[in-house]
Length: 188
Image 1: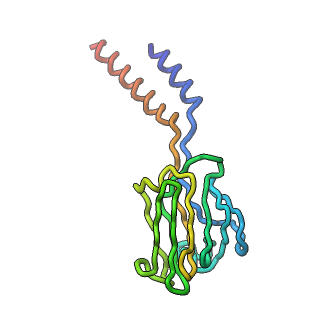
Image 2: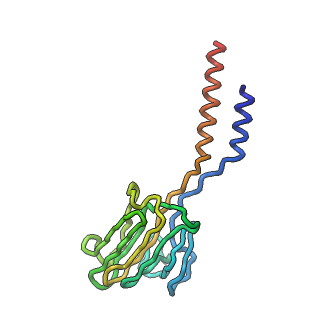
Image 3: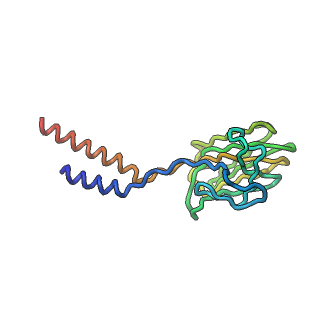
């Protein structure tokens, strides 16, 4: 009996994929200047203007996405139709008042981040979306500079998807443990 479970465990081990690590889009390695299509961590922007000024202070000198008045950039999965989740992003509002950044998702998520609430020309803020169902399992997310000023976006967090087969490790360990307990009880 233990041989059967051992064989099943060995077969499962051979087919289980290791879980992917969480990704943060940091725009590292991107060339600054003109608007371009940009891909990182399996996600792609249709139109992103990458700049090195006024970006997240924690990554001094590192680039970020810049949006001028009425500019929009859409983020989708590199795999057509694949869903993804955004857990957080860093943003900064700059320039002429009123500065405003609008963030929308395919599930109807609609955030309007205004200068009146978040300030202008400061060190930027990280917006946490953990637990917000409107930004989980989405097809796309857009960032639009909807005010008169400029906006910067950086450090877009996306959690790792844990492959379903990885749960098999726990199931096999539990079955082996239960079998061992059962045999031990019969022996007593």
